Image 1: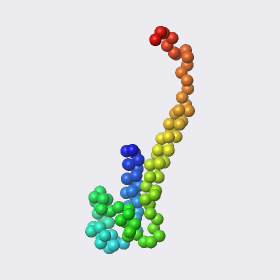
Image 2: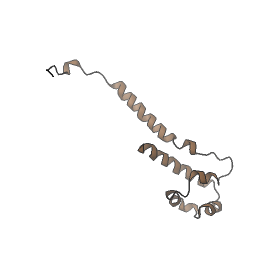
Image 3: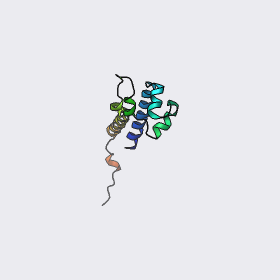
Image 4: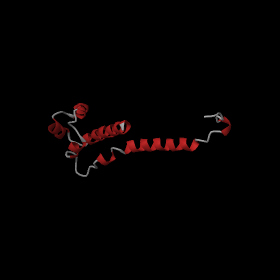
Length: 103
């Protein structure tokens, strides 16, 4: 869960930065009370969010919300592929190494 959250937050932050570039500076300041130079502070306070920015961007701008888990899913798919590869590399233990003593 931590890795999914980490990559999701990275994607959300990148989306916010991308969307904020499409918003007029004056409109951004009117909506959030600070300029774009304070964007990191606004993100950390959760004042600026993707839904709030979507209200301000020009019509026709694609909402990035459905894509915030893409990176997480790619990473998890990579881990699953590595697990499959390691499972395929497993071989039975040679019987000569088995302990033949009484249990």
